[in-house]
Image (cartoon, rainbow, N blue to C red; front, side):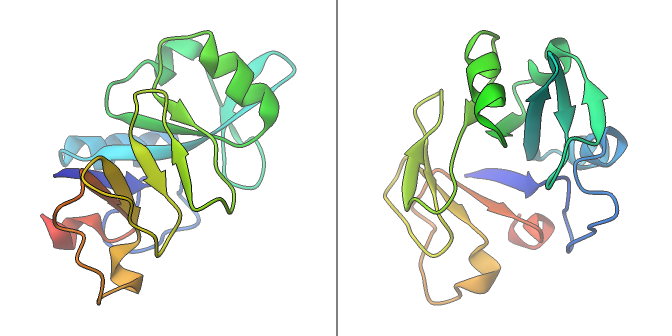
Length: 142
């Protein structure tokens, strides 16, 4: 099972620190992969949920523990040209990541190669056979 911290959160939402590189590092130091929100604006990568906030370089994204969520079409295109693990989704039930995982929209579960989002919100869904989970409360699942 792959345990993925949502934006660096591990024991609950912390919207003031989400996607901050230091916050992400803390989640990785606890052994988790991390889903991060990536923007590409004016030829520059940045992290941030609703807007680009924390400027980073392409080398930063080349981390095997990152699941890079493209937040604008330019980020999707730019990440295609570097060696990072990325995907795009909005409200589609399923999307494929660049490494072939099925990223499931919350409440949907596709199968053994899927990543189930926010299991804390769907206690009746048995996700134990999937490849991994992504959660703001990922610590409680280990």
